[in-house]
Image (cartoon, rainbow, N blue to C red; front, side):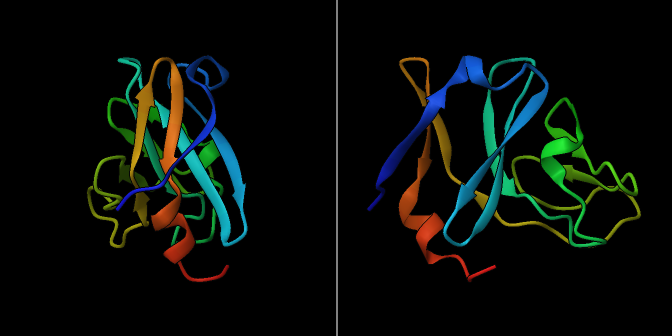
Length: 111
C-alpha cells in the first residue's frame, strides 16, 4: 500500500536538474528529465558519498559531481565500468505536483 506525499510543484525542480528532499532517514534526490519525468534516488553516491542532487542529468541518467559515476535514474544501477547502485524510490506527478511514496521512504535504513 502506498502513502504518497506531496513534495511540491514540478516547476520547483529545474528541467534536467534535481531537488534534495530531507527525510527523517536521510536525503533523497528527486530528478526531473527533459521529458518532465521524475525519479527519486538516495542522494549519496556509493563511491565517495557525492551529492547526486548536484549531478548532471542527461536522458534517464545522472552523473555524480565528484567522480563522474553515472547512474540509471530508473534502476539506480551504475553504468559503464562503475559498479554499485543507489536505492530508488517511487515518484510520480499528479496534476503538476511531485509525489513520493512515504511508505518506502519510512522503510529505508537510518542514515
